[in-house]
Image (tube, rainbow over all chains, first blue to last red; front, side, top):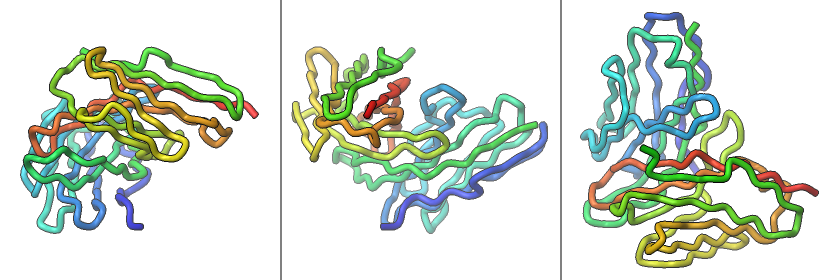
Length: 116
Length: 114
């Protein structure tokens, strides 16, 4: 079965550079979530989109922005990168309909971002 | 403010025995709960979920129990196998808004010894 696809798997950037992470959800999933996981930490929620609209926002820095496109894929844009942005970035997708209990979210393999 | 807490950072059990992983939450708005298994440098893998309208859900060797009054849930794995060794995350969500976040606990490292 198709899973959540993230690209690239690994990314090395210098401070103050920009990075774009891409996420392709499971087919027919309408919701995409972005999480950041630092070393030894639990995944921290950044932002989510439902039907191409932002649905929830967490601790996402102002330097970061994201969107969900008409084909439901999503991109996380990160500017003015800092050393502390080095982490695993996970995308997850699920199928949600308003008024129903959310179903489980399935995660991609993640993008390891290293800022040097 | 850690709304989902896994108080045991690690757990070690013998192969064939039961593994019990615990999770507590504070937010009364949470109405569905999930367990994920994670290997290093990989994404979390969904294991099992439970809605707040239930107190038990079973899938093969995995059973999740929910005690709403205590705001506590647990994952039972029986029998435990060496391949179960991984970090297990508890996650919780509120269904009132489509696309709302999952909040994760800190994780418990399970080691199953042959």
